[in-house]
Length: 192
Image 1 (tube, rainbow, N blue to C red):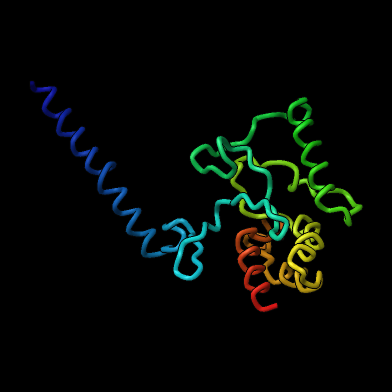
Image 2: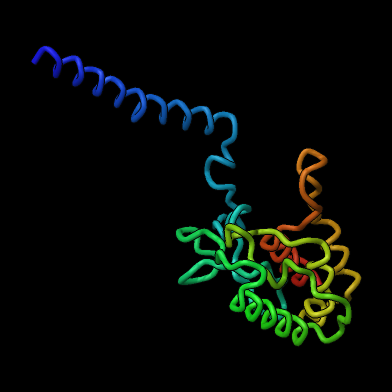
């Protein structure tokens, strides 16, 4: 009993510190300092949550910009099963999937003759990427403009207005958030 009692006191104390006090403190600090991020970086439209800046969505309509393919299952962009396919670049299944994606992208964009941007045909490591490269966005401009009966220049300017630069000015590439771009596209179509 001499040994068990101190062990139970230490166990109880550490459980309170690590299981209650620490989570409450970090949650409180996050809510005070970074409320939008702490609550999931949610995007609202007309008072209704339509998505998150951090998790992609599966846009498939001709009138929308498409994001990266998602490797999550049982449905695309499933945050509960985030992860890549773990298939290497020479794996026959990976090669077949990329080839199929390239064929589908080329078929949907008959006016494009250049190479297909890699992020339109390969999934990211998380399978949840909410952003695409500028090359991928510009590649889709003609299709989206035609489907919405908008001038391609207006859609291109919309993309230009949604560019997110490198993180801290040096990390990553310029990119666009697909959900935010598509919401802006819906607004542009209402005005046209």
